[in-house]
Image 1 (tube, rainbow, N blue to C red):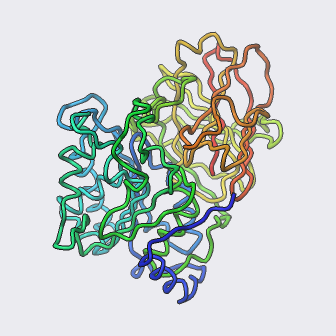
Image 2: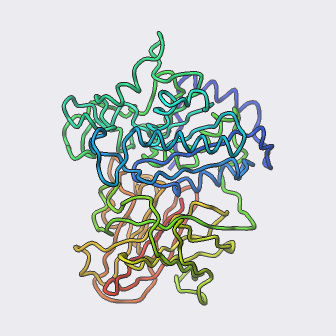
Image 3: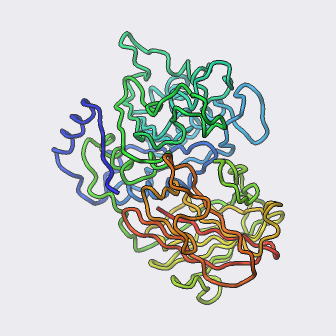
Length: 470
């Protein structure tokens, strides 16, 4: 489906003038002239979601050594920002973590300033740091994708101590006018927001996605827009795509550099070295309605073991023995692993207290240090299944109104309806009889991606994930 790009008059003029100056020539950049970019993920997410965005910057000559995807140890927000909550973080803790990481980046690179790019809740940490943590001096550009800057709801008396309340103290302070013009963002930092026209589940006038269907949220589709910022609207992007899509990359690149990228595509790399962390999920559940449904934290899982197998692209069967084995240490890293171009892989995670987790991935185009692997658990409700398989799309939702999507030859996938608002990133199939067979997940976006895995017996404590890269 064709996606239109809507810009404010001033933003359109600025980008048109920048584009007219000519595209970027592909090739290595002088690091001294290339600002470090720090990427900040959202609520319940991890650094892994920035993988394709990092690749796109690298494909346009940005040095890998100047790209930093942060990983918050406790990325879920507290229900009440003022009260301790196990496994959750406050807005102040998020900001302090970001501040410390920026200082590390500045020390490592010798740069005077960084660019900050945040998705969803990550934008709150960026705003808080710039406004209250000294970031006005260390940040040149701030880019916020899908950040609900005026709240997911703005209902007086309703959960006002949450970070996400537009009438709560946290957002009211962030949004207070900064000058006589009423700007909601402080200078001298340059600001960009990227939002959907109406397909962001967290910027909706109806409270369906906060468990209050039919109740007015008092926020609109424009909740992410900020007065004083350059505000871009991209048609039909879902909440995650406002940060992780090719269109979002294009807008961010133009804003930082003043000209168009040479390509939105990911250029293949000859030497592909992969690494990342092994962390743990909550239960593997057949109800994927919640963003944090399968999530616990970003802490390393102790005593985990990782096996990697090359698999046949049509059958998912292993081609020979393991090509990588690692007993994961205290730092949580499962690599480094040198992958082969064009080869799909199965990653197997074994850890005490977790199911044996089989993660099937498409061939990797480039190397990455944020290929994070999560060990899963099986929910009590799924114990009767013979095999449990999830199709997951971490960097966007499964939206049949925008993309053709198949899961085990079912289109749309089970539990994924054609709805006005894209809302779910996973689909699960519980097979009712034991059989060892291939099972596939497929999505058509700018290109076609197909991941093929195998069913594994849940009775023997195995779960399967078909993870899409797009």
